[in-house]
Length: 201
Image (cartoon, rainbow, N blue to C red; front, side, top):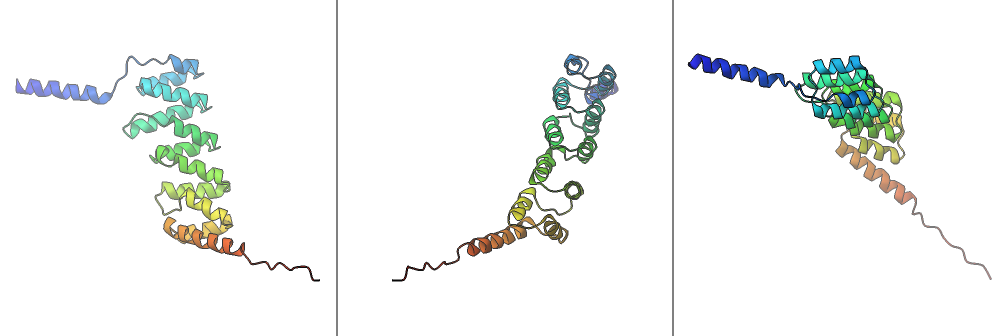
């Protein structure tokens, strides 16, 4: 009897671990313009109703069917449901390629650095620089935050000068100190005393 109980408990555990979603409504994907072959692939991945809504958001952002499937597959391999549609949409809107978005997703940082990545693009940095900074972040290498990079740029530093500081290992705290100094120097330079000469009689 004890062995029968253990067998039943083990069977229930397996069923719970499979996370089957037999009643998922896939019709919204068809209405969003997803190919039937893609929907079949998603069925094999046991996509849930919340994930269907996430995928509809991706389709509305113009994300390809292949990338939609890949993103769900990556999320499931990482033992969680796919919930990063808004992050993907933001990255796509900032002209990041789908291959770059997948790279971020595979690193498990889709929802943690997407805002940072978009900000780097909005700052006006060149594409090679943005890619280099993202690679550093994905590799967990020391990198200045997008906020500090933007502030350094506003003080007049060139992109090359900022990269030199990053490569030297500058931290956000060190950047903050340099920004304060550069802003103080700039403000001091703009407050020079100008003598007003009166009209001679």
